[in-house]
Image (cartoon, rainbow, N blue to C red; front, side, top):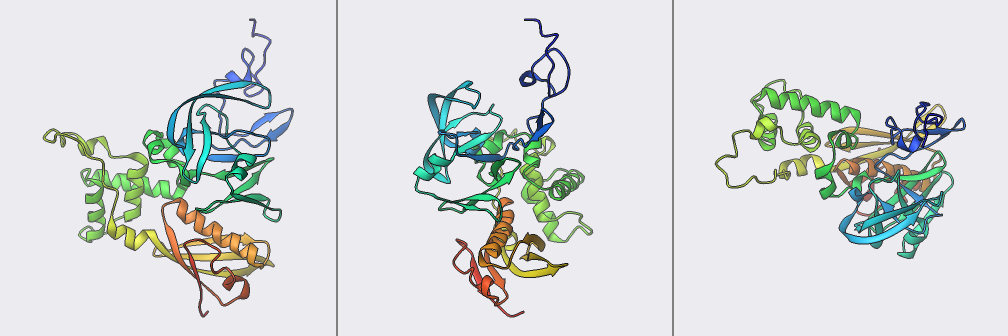
Length: 340
């Protein structure tokens, strides 16, 4: 077939279709006919009322087994799948595996069949899936409703992810600090993860530029440096998995206490939360002072720190009616009124 007259609308070069474009970036915005369409990130999952099947990237699935099946896209193109799996957050929900698909999709109807309630928040422009584990917010992005599924990436998937994909699970400041931790580890002679943590905690080295969590993040993103294990495993019959459990870190860092309050700036209202001992300040705009609006704002803060492995057990708030009314509304979190 003569492709010389075929122009790719992705790169504008003649000779191939857009679907075969060598420069196509699946993580960018697609354009056609002058209109832009939001293209989900690889870690985002869409909620689709038109889909009758669940099609997901294997990174979000467990119990993956062979299973021949197929589905059709909106253009009637058929796609065969050879595996299926389940999701921990939706037990019993059958999902087809498709790692080459443009986006991961959950069927609105299939989710409802599991008995999970789905509500729509017109104020926040999102669908809320009220699972037993936690509420999932499918927020409007362009003309799509997508949710961030990074907290549900399986351990099996983490092993096979690229460095770039791992970096995408952390914000820019955390990646920058992790790289600084890498320099510290190199200068220290490539100690093990636990040895590097002990160096930071011991106080024997002054002006240490990194924190314990930076060390953790470095090993989580970049793995154990080759220089750290070269020549050190020849006497062992096996190489053990790195120990990621640190009881001291779990007690001092992972479990957080939060203090939340409302801030008024130029007529706008913001939910402000301080997480300790992490000492991170979180701010989100809230459209009103209603219990529902404040609850969504506080849940967003809690979901954000959970995304990076932290957890809030208790939140102290002013004895404001809408804030106190949040008691019992967030699973696993105690909301307690306190003085100013």
